[in-house]
View 1: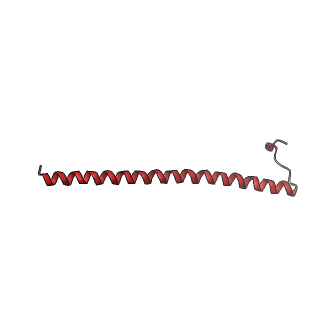
View 2: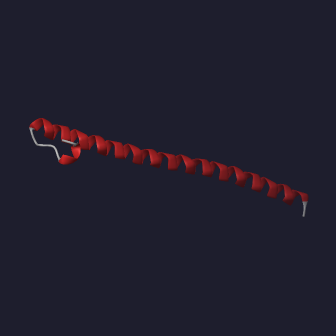
View 3: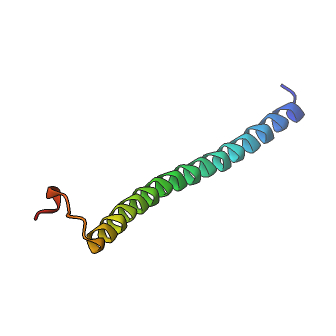
Length: 69
């Protein structure tokens, strides 16, 4: 192999390695955001459920049996 071609290949490998590291870092960040988004969504649904139940209880609607009456 020619020395220039060998240097060119080494530079290509180095750039490719940096690209893969950057791509992998972004992939982890996106997965973390999706997990957090699902967790917050579940919490909001639970709070909405308890909010509606408390309003119904204040109005005078009897609570279901699974609330431990």
